[in-house]
Structures are given as structure tokens and as C-alpha cells.
Length: 73
Image (cartoon, rainbow, N blue to C red):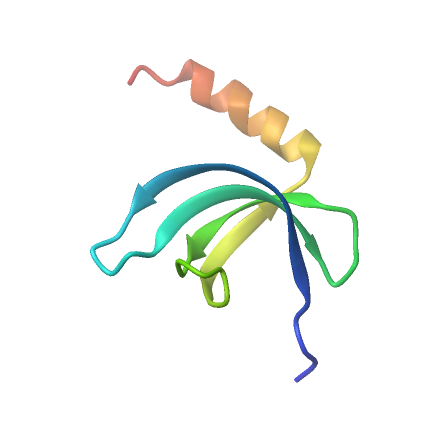
């Protein structure tokens, strides 16, 4: 399997922290040298390990924001 290369271009915030010290974070991440996308996933404290996550384009984040505004929470 090819090596996965990533660069956290901008750290946007921490959503939660697990008991083991991993953080669920929203970041702008460039994967394999591509344009950065919004990325939501769990990260180890040193950002050397990561959990499964989701990446979203700007258009997808805009659509998600619209949907979340409709929620009554």
C-alpha cells in the first residue's frame, strides 16, 4: 500500500477529547499534495496517528452548515 502523506494546513478546532487523549478535530488537510479539504477525525496528541474520518469540500461544508442550522438542538 502506498504511503499516505498529509499536511494539516490549518487547525480549526477540537470538538471533543477521549479518555485516551485523542482529539476529534476539524482541520483543513492536504492529502497527498492535493488541495486542502475540511477534515473531521480523531487524532493522537502528536498527530502521528489518526482514526477514520470524513473529508468535505467547501461546497459540502456549506451544505452541512445549512442542514445543521435547521436542527432544533
